[in-house]
Length: 553
Image 1 (tube, rainbow, N blue to C red):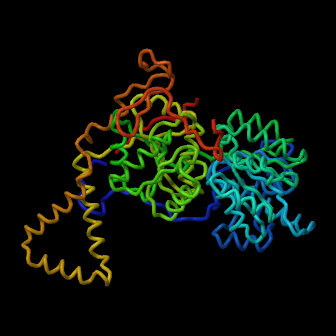
Image 2: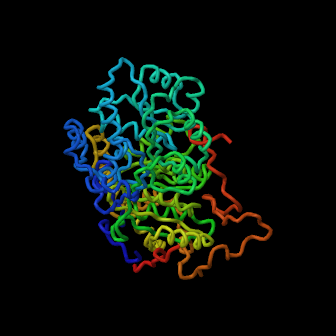
Image 3: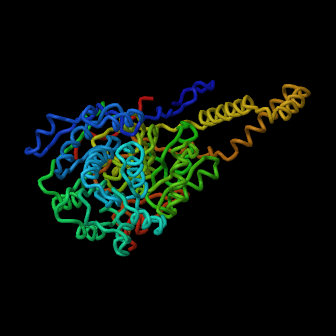
């Protein structure tokens, strides 16, 4: 990375992979049914030849030519009415795994029991609005031939519209627990006709405080009901809930085949205290990812980083529970369409983000939980594509990060920040490349202005032109802070790893949390402020397989 940069073609960059269908094939997974009584489902996995032709045609039109392993293994068990407990990696096709058999089953039931008004036959709960809307979109697009009437019930949206849609009749209700309980209390929704109950990412719902809402909903459901658990991770609380709700479930577990099959490259950089924001800006402008998500611990940190990046000229926007429903939806749409380059998000929003071909995620600090790291990293490298997951570490976070890598059984390579000279040279070349692109993209409307510029430049000698170009470039790069670049990073080899909790803590501090660095410099002690989501997102109130790998560059 420290070699001389002499021409535009040598500029470092992270390219986004071509966009593909959400549920494309993922051959680098293996899947197993761990409940012995249901092993026969592994012998006859789903093939698309078993599906109605109209459904297959619509899936193929979206670029989905065959089922993923989790879809193939769970389809018939769900169709047969069994409860299912499925743990599967992010990006492996979980949404279509339960929505496909649900849609086909409900369509068949509707034909047998035709009525003028549809009653909800399936209830799907998710931790976030984004994930709820994403699932509803699958029914409305990929599974449109089944004719499902689907509603997304999430906070921030109009009560009147949601109640009107429920009154007109729906087949499938997808929502967040908070708003769903609100409508149940208002008498706008009845669950008596529900036949299938789906909990998607249930561990996240419990983590952000939806336990009471889930219990309230469970009491209103019919006693004889099919229950489906789908999640990338299952923590102890989720496992206990599954043991309570599920009856002799078909248990499906899906894992990557091996370390080489993992398409996500994990990386880290140890940054001196107070310089993380400068280091983040340096990484984004030097490596030039086409898009990326930056994950933060708190809403305050999220807003500060987003604002700071915008001030420096980057297209960045926040995504957290402070935003209203329509603002969050607009932000996500802008990011998915490429109008927003960097999304600065909290963990509450992480599970609802699904952008295909995303090349990079960055952890601004080490996540507190392994599950959080898993789901953050799972936003990239989806559906078998490659991706990068970088983490910025303060010196006192090194031990936590290494232990986290050991738990997820991954290795990480040290990212080396460029020298000041290399960085400036790279940025200047980028600016010249951009100026050249702007000059080539003259529209007919701007032709007169272009001619005037040509005439002006014709009368100038080369030295004067050089001075003008220098002035333009200096104005463009004036906001770049490179004075501290040489001392931003601390080499991993210069930090001695110590066992858990052995680092010296601040005297008289009662907190067991490590010092966490704020985006604007300095730091704060104690536990970071919690996400504190609104009701639609939450209540009001070791293995040696992983570790560091130094870069050979």
